[in-house]
Length: 180
Image (cartoon, rainbow, N blue to C red; front, side, top):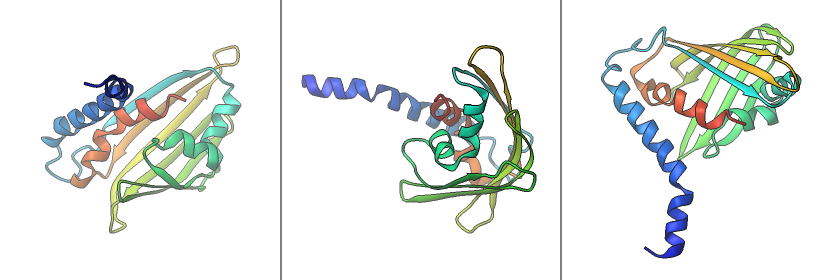
């Protein structure tokens, strides 16, 4: 192997590990995704201690330009990211990548600036029907100093079989994208 090729291979090692993790998750989930509603009730909790103020972390959830950088993986192009932080506010996430368009729509149920944001979000399939819906409960706390404790609880509902790759990628995606 040429020295430059070795450096290139080493530089992309983390990306290959992410793809391998995602593929393993899809394979593990495939045996369960044999009928609609297969993942209903599945719950995820993600926590992060972030070295920024709660106000700044809140801004990354509600300001469209900042939300796009927080929510979307680098491989996707953002068309629209919006969370209106008020009851009945719109939630819209639209991304493009690998020739696919990914559209999610939802509604804010509750917002308490800068502490809590609760919303439902539905990933739509190509025909515009629900592939799955998730209920999100975001809590931001200040443990001291200029730090923010982020906790996101996510519960999956209304799953379809075609949602398999998306649901399988939730943990990999969260651990990859939302470390900023």
